[in-house]
Image (cartoon, rainbow, N blue to C red; front, side, top):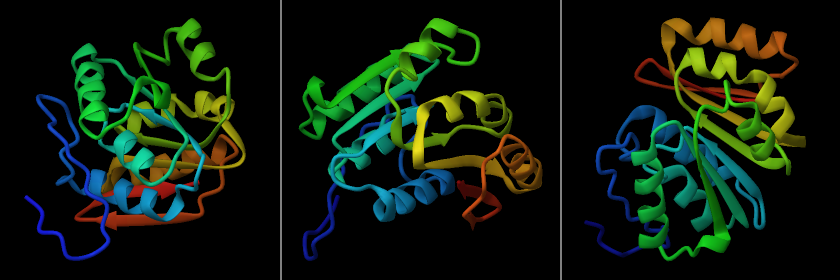
Length: 182
């Protein structure tokens, strides 16, 4: 429930069995970052979309289009439901179910048009494995948000991102969970 009284944007979400209620530290870090980074008309890629909370947030904040990807078909169904719940029609987004690391056709489809902003709120191992795909998908000057990183793995993820040619612009942390903006 939300009591109106300020100019905050209200995002309605039913996570069902998907990750992404908005209460976990990693999701909150991503939401707060999106609030500061999304520009009108941005093309956004949400890798590991879960409930679709970050996709919905990006569109509510003015993104022009989002691409939602998850390995779990239930997450894709939940994402679609949450996008519709927040008033977004299918022309504002597209969804893909599959493993973008192993499926080159899926990776090529996702990377066909570059993105202004990529959010990847997943886990350290997947972020590390997706570094080449992030390079393919990100527009020059675009932003990559990586989260879902437990503190003890943060240095490793930072090293891997930097060795792949990314420059870390910002590190944010909540209760031993880390977000990198590159």
